[in-house]
Length: 579
Image (cartoon, rainbow, N blue to C red; front, side):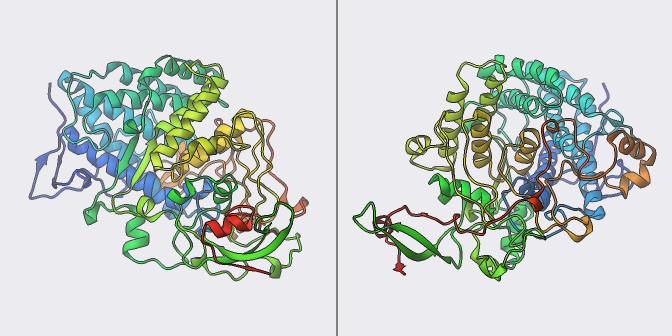
């Protein structure tokens, strides 16, 4: 057999982009050093593919849209975060997906599929291809698939159903074909050559994608979801088996967040801040993970609170104290035109950005931070939903739910999980009224609905996995979130609902693949943020008409942060003033 050899300039670090293509008009145009040539092994190619995936999905796109769409970030600027887009950025996303990631990964498959000595490594490349395409199709909708990666600019767009059908089948085959005693990647940036973990990742990813499409393609979803659950022993079974992409300590391998927000000392107007409603759900239930996920404010605000006087359970007093953790609403302090609110009553009015809390620096702003692809906690919440759908499982949905919470606490080193699980709203079968958000229109309350509980906990356990939670919310519509009240001016909207998808890049696709591009738009019914994908829940769902609601500014986000008694403030050593 004659392999199709590719040559690149190699560097020592695993995470250097070993085989990268420039953003040109031709997928086959390759950056090389004309003086130093070395044959690129599958391991070297794959390391570069993973690094490119990490930089795009876990870096640029996570920062610019996914984390805002998941309500992890609040009040962040830029067109994408304000529910619009720029054509230039879209063009870059598209090219990075297809050229830097998928084309390079396909070279492994094409070059080594006929050689049995590379069987496992080809299966791993096919798993990664399925993972990347699962992100593409759930972000944009129908995309080029069958005819893509062949060196031609023109490629037809395949339907969501076709792509999901194929990638789920690929994952099943890869899971079955990986031989734990066979060949391995010399440089494996995900599992360090552990083939059993690759098998579990393939099966877990198949279950995750099956659940994601269960609204749009229920038969296909059940087929693969039930089969994956039947192989439950081959699902991720501990935090030691989490699938994580990591950046490195060398400057060329630093994380997007460190390079963007720490190394260059970005000012307070640029850095990301925690979303108020995400923080509200941690605060309401005294969630110990708050202190693991969130940095205290650099300049805390002072709030007014009502607590019981020391030693009393009847007499109340009004106190003031500094609130150490404070999230920012999605649209900052903006409301909806027509509400007629007095902004002087809005605690956010004129508030400097430094007063909001940021993501934990040692986890989410470190040079070598990780980006979670699938975690043990997440797979337990997925299994809980699968059990509700009748896809099987060795435990009840309730037990999977609790296992997910426990795994998340363990993952972040948080203590107090038993007390947390017994709180009203968190405990299976209980409800909680919760606290109101800034405008009093959504709350952190949790109903008795099992799906409400499962999705809420999956959200809290999946911080920084913006794409996953955006997809979950589009499918379930369960998270109690507000819309973007400060949308980009180009939207022409007073407020903007959560986008259903991202638009196709008109520059690259409209110019180089126009016929297929126009067909795709016609089939989708348009090329806007609000053309719903088939995987999204559309029945029994309609966007909130916020202008018809009556808001009430409040400070419930800080109420009883330390407890409902003066004694709680004393026990925590908090400086407070009775007023």
